[in-house]
Image (cartoon, rainbow, N blue to C red; front, side):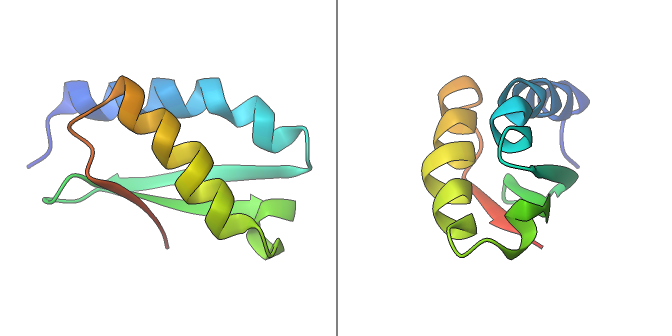
Length: 78
């Protein structure tokens, strides 16, 4: 079971990143954190169909999230 404090910290961090996605017409939806500390997200709006979505996910969201929540192992798109 994932710690509720970690979930809250991840959600807070994602909210801080959200305006960058919104600026391009996109958004993200938090799904969950699994037992391997992988954060599962769904990119929506313009980000859901963008060919650069993987780069945004890995080089943007994942990098930013790991800086504030080092216990996170990876961010994956569902």
